[in-house]
Length: 483
Image 1 (cartoon, rainbow, N blue to C red):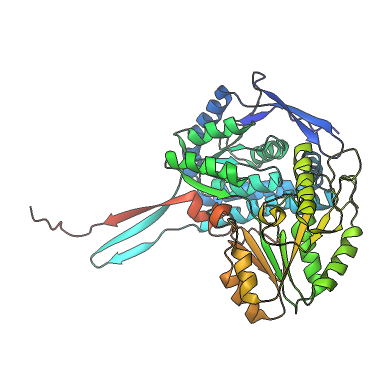
Image 2 (cartoon, helix red, strand yellow):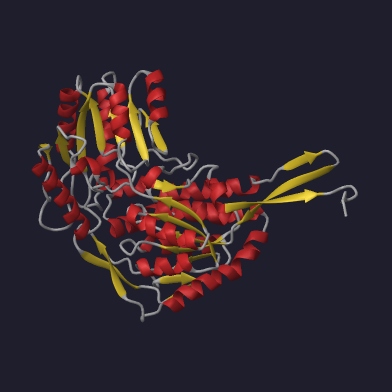
């Protein structure tokens, strides 16, 4: 059960340790067993990482884009060849079932590296005819980018940030969550094996102070965070103070609207994916499930039956469908929200308790008769807790769905395609699904509005967040001057 890396940090192509940094553990949430011990980066380690990125970036940017892309595509191939061992690592780090990590974590990271590896050589500027004269634009890398990761999808998140950054000629210093420190180190070693020059991708460990030091560094041009809204406010403010480019992928309390004509079996399956996958620890989860009153009873019956049949247990067993929370703290927070839902008068349909006495397991929990003002309908719980709300009128449910500070995602289930497009057009969310939920292919931009974030990851939209435009005016005649 040990997954001890060679050292805590990976800087300039070298495993790096500084035991003066605070020690912290990576814990397997299913048992509480320590699988790795690491040290947080000291200021000296942070300085070395940024220096390495600065020193390596210009040479990397000067390489032909097709060469940069080739490195990323080789890394994608290595990840796919080692998918099982990387998935086990991810399960030990996060507690997510191997059934999930085999298909949704390292595999998703490989997709990002492959996609942006192919994208790199297609990036071009514009030529603008101006009569006798002309102008053209160049797409340039930003320089040194900082990535700060969350603990729910560590391998996917580091790849979603590193792939576009490196493809377009930037260097990166990445800080994973202290709860899940291992995947980024594995990626760093794989990128080196694939031919990435030393210093182009560096990993430093630590808590918020390490992230803050990276964000404040004047040599850093870009910050990309995946995390909570409170953390996002602090990081965004610090980036703004330094006038740095920033993308923030933050939390949500997303609506999933199920109309009376929806295919209920599909809607139930999507609602479960939108609340119970990864033990509910997904920022885009549709945790406010609005169900038309005509189908509410049938929906709840089907949902309860399928929820009670879910298999919880050892996440290293591929038969397990739901694993533990990432930590005891997260488990306690989720159980607290469940008690609050009960106290507010929501009807408990199933679940609602800790599962067992070992590990951080919380039963998949279903509340019905939830009202809009209940805390469980307003605040992000980040656990396997679904709130089902009734509705009758289309305009009313749209208004209620939008009545939140968040705007990350939304979903609509209906057989009426006109209504589906009409409703989605009015939902205040950056990522929407029709008759599906939580599918995030790398080809599609992902991100939120309102408090859920700024900017987009993935797709062609990522080009705007990891490059800048230089405009060049070319005068081809004599200068006309009044002087």
